[in-house]
Image (cartoon, rainbow, N blue to C red; front, side):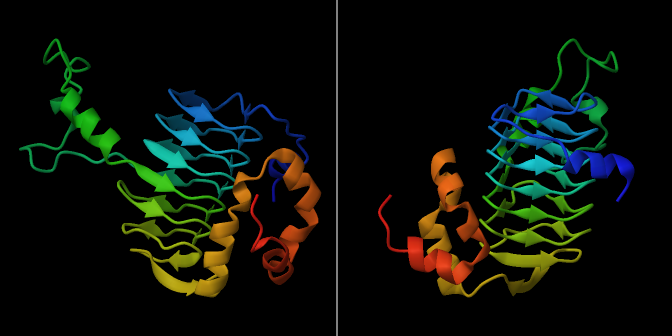
Length: 214
């Protein structure tokens, strides 16, 4: 860990989102307690509470849940190109930039928006991973470093590789189902603080909160 990275871990966060001065957030919504590290670009996306990104992350047209851990150099929803055209080059839709037309081809940008990525809550995305357009990643999943995710990922599943494939489950299906029913990520701050220590013991956690009506 570099000195800069070590310094980031000491940063005190607050209810308002933190965005590093070198990062850019465009037309996006950042939840409370979020932390956006250096050289991150977020476009047309929603980032849930407590989610953080490490450096050099690029996110576009995505809905990212709460409590997600996004490592450095991750790419969520890289832009697709119109392969069906004679040329895939973006001059065919970024026409004004190349002085080829007075208007851009908005249909391509709309197509990208509609092919959005959905990331669930409590998802960990490893260094240099890529989540391709249209993919849904379930709650509690893990995406291994360097993985290229081209298909949906089940909740609490660990995937890795190119293309990414299931490796194993974090928990049994029964435990995963119970955690999703508890949906602890929706607790308010006061409840989270009161039950914070219980997050370290899965069996105790399910025993205490599995059958409660909040």
